[in-house]
Length: 338
Image (cartoon, rainbow, N blue to C red; front, side):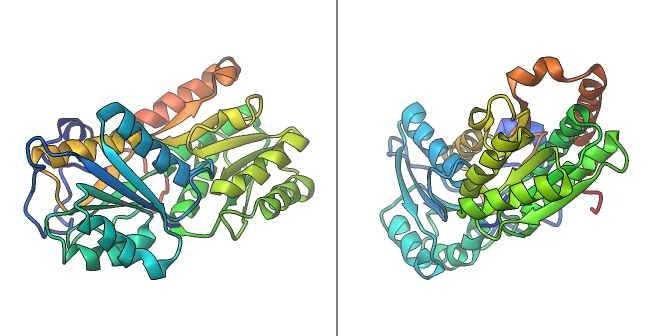
């Protein structure tokens, strides 16, 4: 399940103000802007590769889709589509039914979406978690790592000596980015802050995820955990509960999983992202380009659990505010390699 970018949708004021226009090296638009017919019913379809109740990446999109239906009266449909063999047929089915927007929730859908888009030039295709736009397909690159960097600062403030355990569902680039940024955030205020990274090897294996977290706690002495593991995170939360260690949320605000042990979550405002895409379609400015969701656009952010607000020291608050300003201004690369 590869993920995550909202640059600018020309004509969408909020995104232009937040992010600016696409870079000169962005792929050229292959299609002309199109608008929804006046009075036509807006219909949005979603293909998602994981269960809608995973508490993470997939639930995020499914919840956003329901919000669109309730808030804007959009007609919606969602399909659990984990098998690559059905990607193109599922996409063709939705496009053939005249859906206004077909959202593919994960970069694994890019190739299939491009092939199908050729046959449906009037349809709008969006792939989340990817920066590989073009050929009739727009992509939404969600830079969650900017928020996990801030979470790392919080972790170092709460547990200055560390160490932190970093757990990913699978070893993919975007998950690795979130883990590396968390470590860099912690080290920005506590140089040499120790971290240990492991991968579950699955987005769904709760038992294995719990074993992974428990091992980090028992053998490495980790006192704080960061996880980006979707449904498998339930096992990580359980290990944190048993050991009484802090654990950070990812993708959605996960404080309710362990209200007294989740200091903050790195979150994606998928509802806002989808609404801005629909606004662009209505305005006739939607194109097959890379769209970026980051701190500057307000699509991603670090949300502090209210129970921890009073536990953050003045130094931690100051470091958070400074890092946020620098990231938004483009003065701080949280990955340090670009």
